[in-house]
Length: 101
Image (cartoon, rainbow, N blue to C red; front, side, top):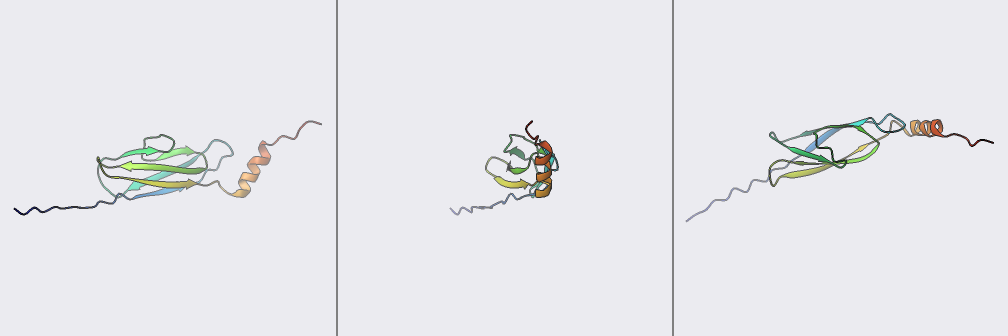
């Protein structure tokens, strides 16, 4: 008896667009991701959000794991930067209050 095994390897690729954080506190950065495979996917972000795209993010690193079916998953990491280092300096100066003399 001959048995043929078709061992297809499927790559689940995640791509994304990052919008920078432009606020001094909290966050308004966002990540809009796309997945190369059609069909139903589940998403879990490092902040426990379970949506495809996330927003209101502070600056920093954010990770998503996308699952398509019982054995196919992929993880991607995105960095939400601040508007600029000059802007961060402005935020710091704005929130700093000199001690009373």
